[in-house]
Image 1 (cartoon, one colour):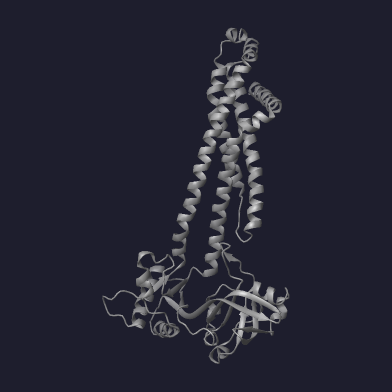
Image 2: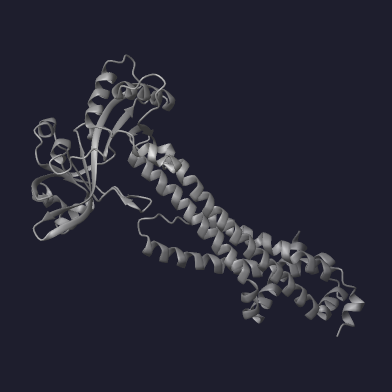
Length: 420
């Protein structure tokens, strides 16, 4: 064991000397490994970040919430015209759903909350203007099933909702923009929406965004009847329905489908003219995206590592030929074949590890650039991913260096000493 450790240390020293003696050649030889490690780590960083961001976003939407809407979340596909011709969801459908839920013993549903949305509205406070705001008109029960936390102020009451008071709760970024970062001063202030005066009664805490695309902090929530003053269309109306914790998704969907058919007045045999959406539909949509990223990353990784392995094998063969007399001398002085094999194998592994480390450094730099370009997307470089990259580097070194190292170990000492 002690002898093996001494030989291992000696071979590592020789490998280090060879890397120092041929710095540029070693770096160029490791280029394929560098590209492969960059591809696998950055791909893993993107997929891990996508998983984390998607999970956080689903928590914001609520995994116990069903959404009754006109359109499916997964896309209409070839049935676009059929979905377009469906009658709109109306706010009164939500109230009737609540009546059915209340009259249903042991219902798997808790409450239905109607809401109507309009996009790209602006909010003005003095000279400051917040553009492209997502407006949601809803009822007070929305606060019971929403994951939105209030940082300052409060949510609107039943009295304010019934009286259609012009009150509004604004998002974190909206308050920052309108009140120059002083969000607490927003409570009680007056803003203008569609030319109407509204009193800000609350500010939401920072919520983040959906995969860096749709911000939850760039919205405003106001009473549904108040929203109807400037948005009377039903095209943006939907109903959020909360499930009971003990209910299964299948039970809740089945009950909600039957209740909505009663609300719509559909006869037996008639197709549903509404859609029940849930967060797992988004998971099904994001699955092909992750698979595409992984497939592309693995293809680039495999190609780069294959080219890198061929290059390392070729350079190791060259190194064996250049140092044939050295091999003969070491064998003549008593070096075992396994010692020679480990010498060249460790040199190949050392080159690959060098490539792996350079690749990881490049990935860290690329990650910093990506975080500057997409600040809301979580690029996560986990320790497990770093370890996997280093293991891949070692495996490539072993596979690419074994044949030349084995050939070196089988050289005849006398023939090697006569080599010119």
